[in-house]
Structures are given as C-alpha cells and as structure tokens.
Amino acid sequence: MAVHELYSKRQAQLRGGDTDVYQYEEIPRKLKVQIIHIMDRTIGNYEQSMHDHFRVTKGYSLLVNTLREEMGVFHLPPASKYVNPYKELTEYFLFEGNVEACLDVIELAFKFIDRFTRTIDHMNRHGYNERANAAISDLNIRFKENAVGYQFVDDEIVRVDSELIHAEAVKPALRLLNTNEYAGPHQEFLNAYQHYREGRNKEALNDCLKAFESTMKAICDKRSWAYKPGDTAKALIDVLYAEGLVPPFWQNQFASLRGLLESSIPTGRNKQSGHGQGAIPTTVPDHMAAYMLHMTASTLVFLTTAEQSLPYG
Image (cartoon, rainbow, N blue to C red; front, side, top):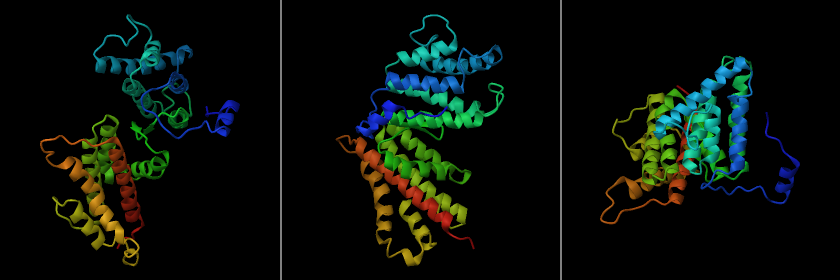
C-alpha cells in the first residue's frame, strides 16, 4: 500500500506547511498510528484468517518477549495481565511517551519486517519481499512527513539532521560501505551514528575517525597497496595519493583536498575527544558531532567512488 497524497496534504504543502525542520523530542500519536498501520499490513494483525493467525501471533510474541526481557518486566505497560501480543505491543507503543523507548519498538519491529517477512512462509503469500521494502520506505516517508528526525537505514534507526546532507552523503556512504570488503568501516560508521543518537558525541567522533581510517585500509587491501598496520590517517592519505587514487591531472584542482582529509576528521576527533581533557571536562556539542558525521560520510563517499572508478592493472 503506497503513501497517498491526500487533498489536505497537498493543500498544506501549497501553504508551506510541509517542513524540513526536524524535532526529536516526541513521536506524535498520528505517526504511531501510521506505523501500526504499516505493521498491520506487513507483519499482520488479529483480523487475519486462522491459517495466518498462528504466524502473526508468533511474530508479535517474539517482539513482545524481546521487549519484556530487555525492560525486565512481565508485561509491557499499561497491561497488568496477559493480553494477546499484538494488543500488548500496540497499546504499549501508543501509551509510551519516551522517545527512545518508542524508537526501540520501531527499530525492533522493522528489523523483524526486514529479516523475517520476506518469504511466502511468513503468511503463505507471495510478494512479501516487495511488501517489506515498501514498509521500510513508507516508514521513512512517515517520519519525514511528521517532521520527526529519524530514518530506518541498514537495519537501524539513525538520526537525521539535514535531509539534503542525509540524502546526498549519509545514505550513499552506508550503501557503498555495505559490502564484505568494507564491513569494518560500515559498522564503525553505524556505531558513530548510534553514539550520536544516544548523546555520546565524543564516542561518535572516535568512531568517525575509525571509519575513515578503516575505509582507507580497506581500499589499500582491495588494491594490494602496501601500508603499515599501525598507520594513522596522515600516513594512509599519503599512500592513497602516491597510488593515484586522485589522478595527477586533477591534483591541482584538488589542492585543498589533502588538507581537508588530513585536518578535518582526524583533527576534529583529536582536539575534541581523542586525548586527555585536562582539569575541565570537554564537551562535544551536537552541532559539532553532526558536522563531523556528515563530513565523514562525504569523505567516505568520495574515497569509495574514487576507488571504484580507478582501473586495475
């Protein structure tokens, strides 16, 4: 089922009511209900036929039992006794006011959708691979429509601070790194986003640098370019330039690129989080962490696409 452009939505857009300014402090009830509708048509609901009912119950039981154990409760609030798992999950989701707790439900449910609903076995029907893709797409559209600054990307909820930067840098970076060759930097970059979403900005910068260095090492490994195991960012950049990752006839135009690569990501990490902070604890503000995440993403896109365009031999 596609997201529809209703008359009221079109009129709101004409009036300038469609905003790109995100908020992170609330998951509105409207968005929660829209998400439940997506879950209903993808995982199923308790109005399914008896044949499908078992699979639906099994799916929601897995989600509910996971949340119960992680939260250390016997029933998800507000339930005080056993109700069916679909009702327990959806009522808890609608009842819960904490944003991170709501994001836990969303991430868990859509991980289930992404991993377990893609076969005909889930509800004995064809087309569930496409339905799972559509559900994830619809979720991300609903996040944006409700001006809630999160997206479900590569099996995780990530925070979005700029739709343009996210679309042009972060998503391509995750897509390009989502291979066996770049498994290490892919996980480190996801870790950086996770730290940022949870307010651990120093850790986010540390993982930005790890992802940057790991990507350069992965490129060297892929191309059999020699480097020392303990090489840091500066030495790895020297290797990439020496091996012609940026062609010689472009190096004048990219005169500032070396300075950007050498100073931006490593320096941001080193000055803000990498060394002893002294007598006065240092803090990394959100806008600095967001800037470094986006700069890291853009740099990783550049490096990986430059490697792809370089001929072998």
